[in-house]
Amino acid sequence: MDEANQIENKISEKREFTVNSASLKEVRSFSREVFEKIKINQDLKDELVLAIAEAAQNIVKHAYKDIESNNDKMEIKISLKKNDELEIGFFDKGKPVDGAKVRHRNIDDIKPGGLGTFFIQQIMDAVVFREGDKPWINHLILTKQL
Amino acid sequence: MTYKVSEEGNISTVFLNGEIDMDVVDKAKELIMPLVEAKKEVHINLKEVQYMDSSGISVLIESHQKALEVGTKVVLKEISKSVLKVIMMAKLEQILNLD
Image 1 (cartoon, rainbow over the protein chains, first blue to last red):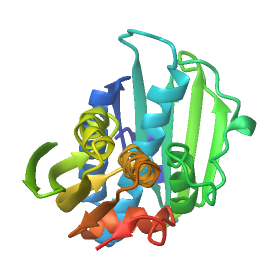
Image 2: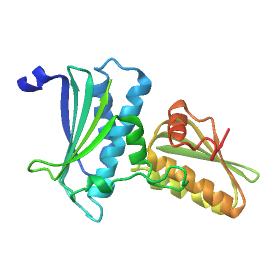
Image 3: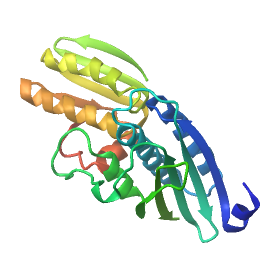
């Protein structure tokens, strides 16, 4: 954690992952490692790990849709601010995502698919899409007050 | 994810073990769907599944719907606490057959 981050945050850790489905297990392991350092109950830890894994899965499935093979990395940054707001940033170099078009399916319309975004919205307080600063294309920010 | 399948009469029980995510979901689907399509009553034992994401839930929905279509059923058995929580978050506890 650098000095500026230490002043702003209680915890701030980031890691890069290759953009593919095999990395999702590593994403969960990283998230669990970070949440071990935060005093929150196990149920909430499990929910946050699910939200992070679903967001990472969306990058693999949607931002990199139709991109057959790549060695691109995505970065995930988990920060706990001094006011106990958890902020999770996702950075990727896939196709630009229009946040306004990201919708979960109607939950009463029972069919496979479309649940990941619903889970993220259920678990987190806010979901914000931004254009990424170079070299990133997309920057997704999930926040939750702990 | 690892698995074991046992057969008793027309009931096939699939014991899943581990974490079910997008990376292994095709394997789970390839295991479960042929049993449903063969009109077996399929019991999916989720006691040893510590994690399931939306991809895994999609397989449960798809197999349940296929079972209704062919006239059989899929029953979820010994559902672990973490999987039950995700099923409930998806508001599927009244839709899927939970035992």
